[in-house]
Length: 467
Image (cartoon, rainbow, N blue to C red; front, side, top):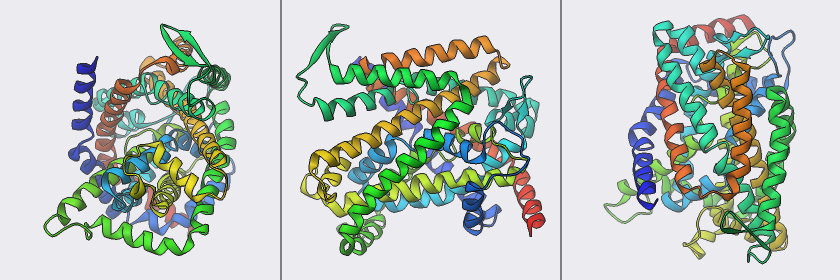
């Protein structure tokens, strides 16, 4: 097993290496130039559209509901653990490059949302179906259908085998267990191993809740996401703002430290370039992994939006990257840097870093601060389970021709995977999920570049119409 995990980790490092990171970043830069910085020029309009419904639009859920469904999959443990990991490995400068990647990634997400609506189709039951597989087939032509099928297969695998199931439920049960029974005093023997009652109960509750929502399909998932996503983001951001405002005099110094770290200014002579490269690589990689710009997941949700305007939905979709990285990840990064927890204890890892920052910065007893972070982790991971179920289902529907029996069977397997998740070792599963997720980006990026002319024309026509 150890050898297998080593092989998986090596493949993961290759897939998520510099070439893929550069491909996704350069795609964002190319689209930003071609669209004349639409994400900067029209951000205000995008935020307005995010909260305002389009009258008479065709689709299954509101634009806000589609956005929340997409955010349910992107705003997850990566916003808490991923940012901490990036700063621990690449220094404070990693946060700077994470935001740079997000700013260009907004152009990528804009194109994904636009193309999802532009080339979506309606099945026999009246459901709107869309995503990279449809804009590859209908936009690039039927001869490219094989590329769309590759994306769809990877989408099914990444949802069922890792990111949507095992890793998320394991994160939830671990967080609950670490808070309620960190010393493992109340345990039960299952499958030849000892598990705490807190772990078992949390796993059962989450499985039942997920099953009830997943059975309801996209409308059910969207309704829950519309409640959970704003609620959990507000709680988390308020906690971060409390830390920042109570340490407001330290914020300017933290920003200076981030900028200096981004360009290796603090490194010894001759090591500045190397320090900058490390900060850049860790920040960009974690940023892309957090907001999923370019990976092709968000347009699957965007295609279900009630809208007749592809550009409008493209603008709404790009706000997802803004909220995920520019807002949530920045809040996390600043609280970690200001708290100085890594300086005091450089051996901290993952969620321990963010937990230490909350305990130091929040004006509450440590137990209360830890509980708030645990609550955010649970909400973040739970909604990721829901979001990735929908993504994988749509991929499977494309491959099976919307066969209802196949979709129902998949839901059963997905819920079963959530149920057994707390009792699995997830090290190898995380690696496998990472590999599939990274590979999804390749066919999607090819399509975005090939169809960038369509996006540019649609954008120009729409903006001229609304003037």
